[in-house]
Image 1 (cartoon, rainbow, N blue to C red):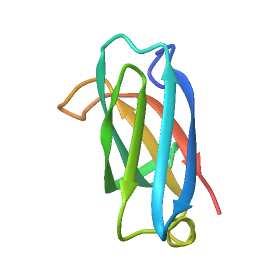
Image 2: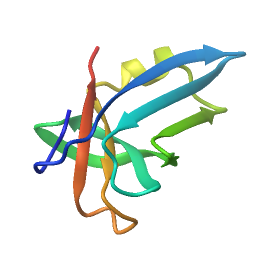
Image 3: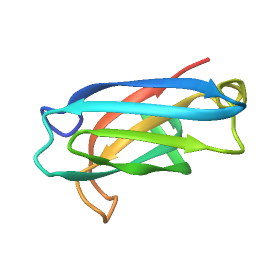
Image 4: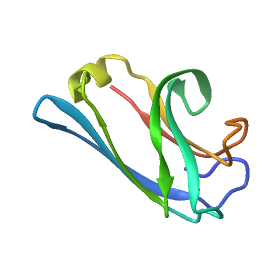
Length: 101
């Protein structure tokens, strides 16, 4: 969901591959080639601390693997929010998607 009047939107897929969490994110409407991405505690209306740093989006896409985490372990930590930042300072959000139980 777009945040702070951005035009960014997209999808994220979470799956287990050989007991590892794989996240695939595809986003449209980015103004830059590389965008920082993270999983934060809370939901898009009430964001908390960063739980997991996700690889940056390159050209609107990223595939990240977490070797010590599974989908079920991630869901137990919900609510979580997958956020895209406008730049490396990680101060301004341009997109937020919620992972709910």
